[in-house]
Image (cartoon, rainbow, N blue to C red; front, side, top):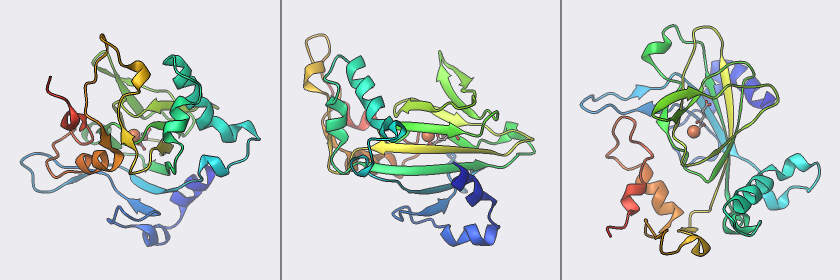
Length: 238
Ligand SMILES: O=C(O)CCC(=O)C(=O)O
Ligand SMILES: [Fe+2]
């Protein structure tokens, strides 16, 4: 978090060395934008994003235990679903996609007319997010309403990828969020875990490769707010 905060304090010309619109790059500074229907120009979000890879879990030490956070979370999620503790970890273990993403939101003169990040769901499996302490910006939808996820001292926000969220700006304080994304590799087949399917819980989506999911999520037919809500593409017509 400290390194990312210092990165965004570098002079713009130094940060600009990393600026790219080529999303295949592994280290990149870029802007998210919104494509509004009927409007030619894209609307840039009130933020700058810096993204790079982080280290595979298998190569990290067992101690201190903070290194094992993702493993612990996947274990708890597996157990919560009534599965073996290592079930999700095993599914995601093979060369997972690991990305760190810093989103810097400068103070905004008119927060009502823009967003730090538009509504989306993440494209990975699990996200661990740290926000600048005391500066609220992240919001999730609860009961049809946007609710702020407060940034409490020493707290991390844990999200599963299907949670719709956005980031709002404020007039006074700059804000940084650091998201650690953990996802499958491009060839991993996404599909229901067999032990969770029964007569009451049937299969709703066809199996698909993670690469297919990424491709459909960046398709051209994007509409405002619709980007990244792509799982309908894989829905089974029963
Ligand atoms: O700034 C935030 O809190 C949201 C970050 C986020 O959603 C993301 O990086 O995907
Ligand atoms: Fe996100």
